[in-house]
Length: 178
Image (cartoon, rainbow, N blue to C red):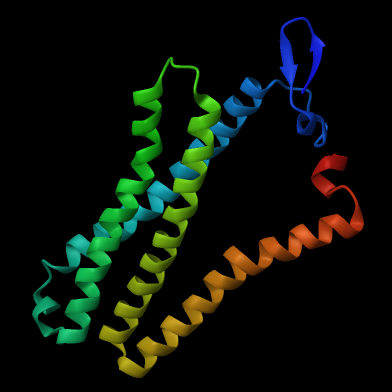
């Protein structure tokens, strides 16, 4: 740790990205970014959960076979878990409010958001699979599952890895040059 001005401690990595901020300022900024991510995740989760809840009250719900009903129940459980995970950082913030623990809050909330992304990915893949399976057939449902899984892996896992590696080879990212 170094000290830039009296009483202001700064982490060495605070300057690597060109920002001149204290640990608390960084925690505040990271918390704001996490909240934006949670808002997007919450909207998607609400839409999927609403769809799942509406399905049970449709006349054709009884036309689902045992596999489709089992998938449906698993998806409802995943939707509940995704909702709980998305609300957990807010509950943590409320419980820790005023305790000067924001860096800890940000660290834990970031982990919860990563877990929630996995749950939402599974939920999205499952809902897509269920809809295609029910409306077109089992083979098409399996194809939808595989395609959805490939897309989630490609966009959520592989693409960030490619971008991380590319940045290391090319120097600063385009965003840092603006």
